Length: 151
Image 1 (spheres, rainbow, N blue to C red):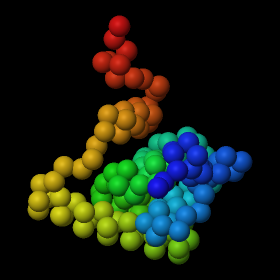
Image 2 (cartoon, rainbow, N blue to C red):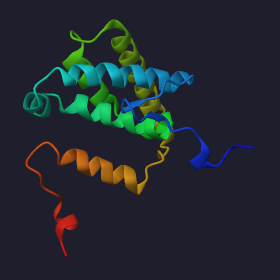
Image 3 (cartoon, one colour):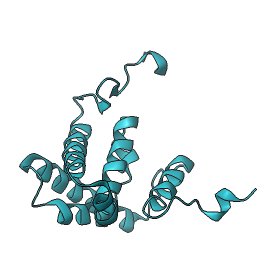
Image 4 (tube, rainbow, N blue to C red):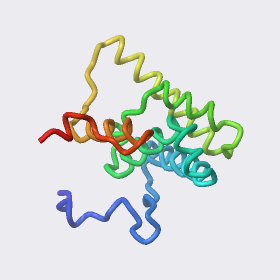
């Protein structure tokens, strides 16, 4: 019997604001990729990172979401964005991060090919949609979609 959700240990180290190390191979790979990309983005000026590294930031946010839920499927990685992030950062990444990101790209491409072949629908919730909308509107001035601002 599993302990109730509130009694389980948090997946986040609240002191360091980093995900806890896990024994799950899929999540470990995501931790390595998210950590390496986050380190790279932290070395850039915020304005430059916001204007030039949008696919990389999106990949990091999606990986972080998967780590928060302890569920690799919650990442909803898009092969094109992972490939763009890899192209943007490949020369500056450490070998472990590059390897993890290439592996995630291969997994994402396989999943996309399988989904196209079987026309399966991914588990996509309202909170995932809202997170996608927030990502789209963080690149420019702080604006919200018209439907969210209407009274």
